[in-house]
Image: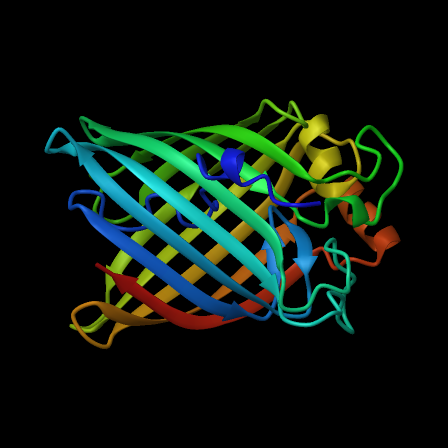
Length: 278
C-alpha cells in the first residue's frame, strides 16, 4: 500500500518521543538508532532487528515558552526479510528488508498550566504493508493500512523525583477504540556528560483497540513497559544514545492468544544510536 503522504505530513508522535526533551527552548531533535526488536504496546512488531529514526521540532507560539507547536516524524525500517526470531513470531510481515514498514507523523500543541504540562496531538500511523498482516479474519479483515489517533497527555512536571503522566489515545479513524497509559518518568543527570531518561507505564485497552493491535477483542489491562535510555554527550549538538526496554502483557487472555500465534508475551531489547539537537 503506498504511503498517503499528504495525510501523513500533518501528524506523527511515537509513544516513546512525546515530550521526551526540554520543552522550554525552541529546538529540533533528531534520533537514529538500531534496536534488537520493535515492540508496540506489548505487541512484537519485529523480533529480528530494526532501524528507527525520528525528527522533532518544537516552536514556541508568539514567543511564549510556556506553549508551543511540535511537529514530528517517526520511521521504522526492517533490517532483514525475516521479522520473526528463534524465540518469537512477529506482527510485521516478512520480506521487506531495508524498507519502511511503519511511518508515524504528528502535530501537537503543548502548554504549561501550573505544575502540569498538557499536550494535545494528532497522530497518523501508516503501515505500507498493512494488507499482509497475519490475521485475515475479524472486524478489520487483516487490513492494517493507516489509522489516526487523538492524544491527550498530562505530565506533573514540577516534581523533582519522578513525574507522573497520563496518556489518553482515541482512535477516531479505522479502529474507533481507546488506549490509556498511566506511568512515571524521570530525567537523571549521572555525570557532566551522561544523562538518563527513565519511564514506566501500565496500558489499558478496549476491545476495538485490542483487536487492531493484538488481533483479539479483549478489554482491560494490556501491557506493562519499562524503558531506560542513556545519552552521552559527544559535543555541543551530538549525543550517543543507548538503552534497554522491557515489555510484558498483563492479562491471561492476551498471553494465551500470543501463545497461539507463537509471539512472545514478555520481551527485553537493546538499542544504540545517536541523537542530535539543533
